[in-house]
Length: 205
View 1 (cartoon, rainbow, N blue to C red):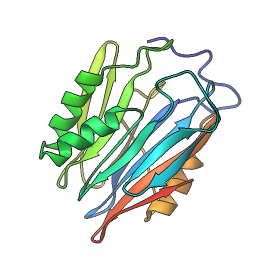
View 2: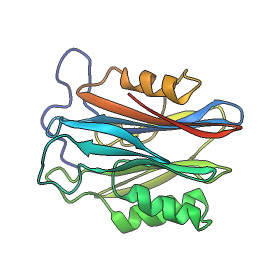
View 3: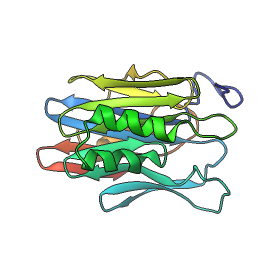
């Protein structure tokens, strides 16, 4: 995979591109988070629209990959991703597919982005019972279950294998702020969904 320019810009800050983060802060509580970092298309924002969060450009770009739903809630199920496959995965969850199957089938169908960098597609899905995280690249497809007590991060560059991350927030608002402040380059905005007994709450930063 070709990584755009240098992976490190200043100091020890790494450029991850887009990142999906998901896990279990506490027993029976889960979160799904999204971080948008971009060098080429920085004029974008996250916006909450009912049961989803959308990434929206603030000026016109001729690029099919820069506007999409990054988080979508379907009843007691949820998905987060870096592209149009958010809707594909959500549709399968709504039809009753297990989270693992919804991720595998959707990532295989959508495949990696056909842009200058062969950008991977990343996603996490909660099917009402279990939480999974996945990535599809030009030469790789991986979907892993996230166990209770764990949180995982996967990104389009550098961290393309899900790895453990410590998240301390206990609400959608706290998570969105926490992941927005992660020490990586060019972060523009963040989004999160947090599930307690009353269902999912959404937040952006």
